[in-house]
Length: 126
Image (cartoon, rainbow, N blue to C red; front, side, top):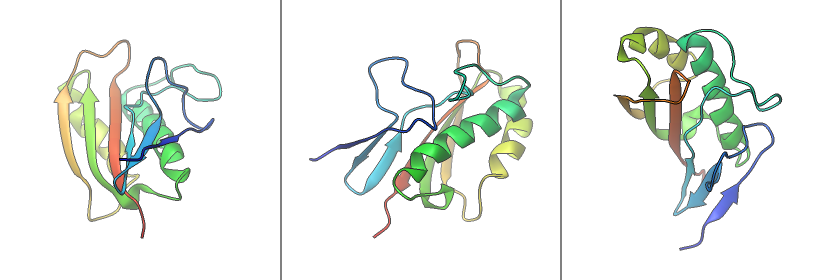
């Protein structure tokens, strides 16, 4: 199986031994992104809505490297530090998407100083 690494300066640099994205078998898989501003490396200020918006911009930047958008996303995994933030998170998340929405799993996670982390799987265009 061939793998292609995807890298962009428009998303936060990896903080460890992982890629921003990998293309394999007709799909682009992204890393889990938090709400860091790629230009400054700092976390965006605000609550879960502001952090979700930044995370979605980070994910969008990786998708764009292969000419993809959220319309190409088939699966999302979301980690929330506090599941009681779900409604506020979902409103911000939904503003980046169009129907049909990708399938999604949302779980409560212990996150290191952030409120939300998201990774996606997108189908490559033929």
